Image 1: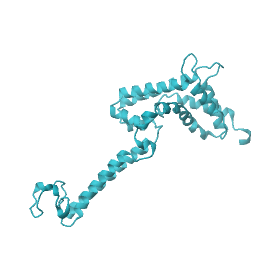
Image 2: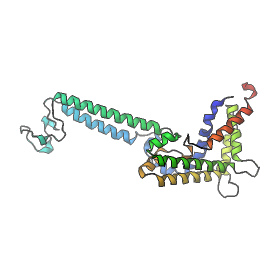
Image 3: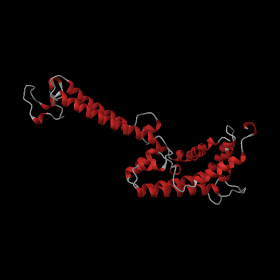
Image 4: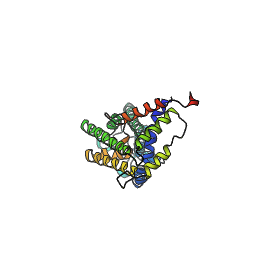
Length: 284
């Protein structure tokens, strides 16, 4: 049995369920930072580059023979309105760049270290934000949630996941449920990989069929659950935290490694069913 396929279970499910939300939220996403579309650098990287350019400019001034730290030809900043032959006083070095060669080297070392540390921080943050299904520990750390905020967020995530499962578990007219059918489809995908076990047809039903007893489709109810979770986050977090969460683009029901998550039991159901099915005859 190919148990490695279990890691793809919720990736496939999340991709399908996210389609509805993406279509509804396209105007908002189009206003999101362009880095999400991969057509332009992250604005923080651009800002960092500008800082590096400015620091390099200052160091270049230091490197000029006889430099006094002023800008412009012959060591004069035209805006200063000063004669180059005038004696410089302590207040005439606005950039604080005059000094000995040893001082210049020390400043260069400080600049290099500061740029290196800031670059590492930006790159690490970009690496973390590339994962749209982070574990709760990483998620809370990246948003700088307090312990109280993290614990509250865990409760929100678990509650949202349970509600999502409950919607899919509502019996259909045929007596089964979309959750039971999902377990069967995913288990067959693990036991017999490389074959179409009907996930596309299953999701088409989620997107088009109405939840029994309601006038809403399954996917509309699921999106409503996610919207409620985001609203709670917005209430509980600072503006900066919530803005960063929105820019990250994490599906709140897809945060991983949350204590008491109902996904743990769902994984168990899928793997148990896959073991019972066993490999297809031609895979033995």
